[in-house]
Length: 337
Length: 198
Image (tube, rainbow over all chains, first blue to last red):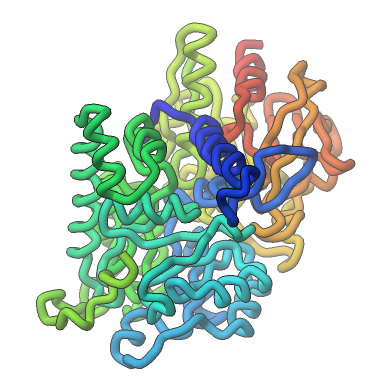
């Protein structure tokens, strides 16, 4: 259990101050789009506070990729905090090639009607309208994901415009803060999807941690310079320094295949885990899913992780791909920096 | 005073920080994570928000569910928010999927409907009047929140929002369907700590 200097409420008040600043700019006719106004009357849906709060209740949990109602049922039974509905698992996306798009809304809807836990779905990077479709469908969170083929090579979706929270991938502190300033409510540090190989996820969380430590030791004037370099608002950099962590919930994703992998990522400072192909590309999905849930919730205690690791057999793990055998054009993580 | 927060999944860090801030204000106290039965040597327990199915599954596997239930039956004060309120109630259904088997503690004479307001899109923030516990009107978030549809026996409603019960108490058990741990007030945590002192 980690304790921080700032509370959720204090972080949110900061985001509202930023919104207020932009509102002033907007009222002066200097800006066209915006997050909602901070004025508050009675009961209100889809605010920044409501969107940032959703991932808090995912912390310490495992989000599992599923492609069918049956798999969603297994994930729920195993104790997943959410399911992510896809057309194909990342491993199969990699094998199939071609253009990977949003999943079939009919399947997403069937999954939504069959389980009690939240349902997420992926859209292509920059594909505003796939996201609008999922918002109309009412999924709980949208993943603007590099696993699918990017629809816009230059821009990400302006996520402030949506009533539904977004999660985005990041390989560095700058990438994470850029996504947050575009309105992402949650970050997942990218691994290399569909490989069953945790090494890239480890590399990227370590880069984020290292950059964070460097930022903490910087003088104010250097942080101003750094914010320009990272192309993010200086205020967001200051919030990150004050909070001494990413200002939204941060999960690990890409290549996690065993309970020990999950515990490793938690130990490195992530708030929870996304498992893609690791569960349903193994030969023991239900037991493996339960074991990864247990290890993620109990990562601080090696005995619990041991118990989790004993629940599964290494012979039944997904085979995995060595990152070094992938050609540069086969890497998904580099999409949308 | 020692408070234990069930720390598998959800808003346990936020609860711990809220409790710590109250302790900073009123004097000494300690807050610890509860993961195994041996961690239950505390004066009060908080079950955080999160996914009740996940918390229930992990608690069951680590053998915490029964000792926790026993402790609560012996009268240790417990605060459950959102998923915690679901875990503590005797009757649980889901607004859309209906009844589903999930591991629960089931000690409070209350009936809870999961996902009562709908999905995340329907999640909201609202002002709740805390008059019953001598608090003010405060802003709270309701995230895929349940509703307490019925209380009976010694359980009573402490706060409602549009005639739906959002906070209830039965002796030493306090539940809310919203999230005091994400709010700008510690009044509910203070009330809970006063329950322990009594």
